[in-house]
Image (cartoon, rainbow, N blue to C red; front, side):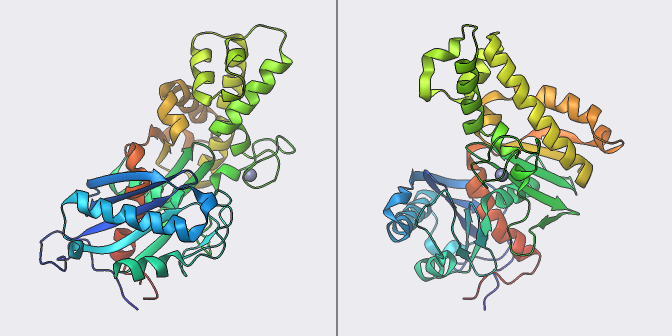
Length: 343
Ligand SMILES: [Zn+2]
């Protein structure tokens, strides 16, 4: 068993600042980057996942991308003291195994940390990608200084991460913090992510916003500027049309805000966080159009004093959050003295 050295450790090449390789396995995109102990991104490269080609080809592409990231950083590979991998669940973080992520069909029981350790010769950590992103925002981004923080990423799906008293909360097997599957309408819309009904994700994910808008266009007798998009309609088309006053889009946008306020109010009541950090493509694409009403209403609707004291802010790490998050897990586990892998 090997423990990763603390972030201040000297690299194997003798350089003063060691660094970590962060790898992010998404359903459509792979990302890799070299990240220093302050969360600084020294390199960042992306490639298509092509998940349908299976895990062997996918990981081959990921590891090739990782080597490209090291080369781009200008670092000698011996400066890399650990590898962090972020991926959607379900996964077994302790054993380093992807169990059966729905966004990677056919990737069942993949021992991804063992394979990465073989490829790079350093301790490797695996974490749920939203939990990893929460760690990144907490250590280096919009959550710095908050001892209790909730992170919500709103993109194709909705993921969450929880920090309690400066420590990540993972649940028994590393699959806790699934805040996208908090129920906002008992018996409501079917959730693509988990199959239940009425989850937050079924209303506010980018996919769900577009789906609800298409349904609203079909059901409405009013003319809508959204009709021209057809199946290519996206959440950002809906938010833009709502901002321009399109009545169908405004109604869909109100429903989106209602659902997010409902879910976040429950989450704030549950955790009384000092800060809620919102990230993901839907949030970066709409910004204050989404945040401003959500901030006002959660503040008013949550139980007090939790509602009055929580700050609801936008992610600071943007597109780098996956890679910085994967690296943050290595630094975070090293800081807490955890053993990283089964080496
Ligand atoms: Zn769900």
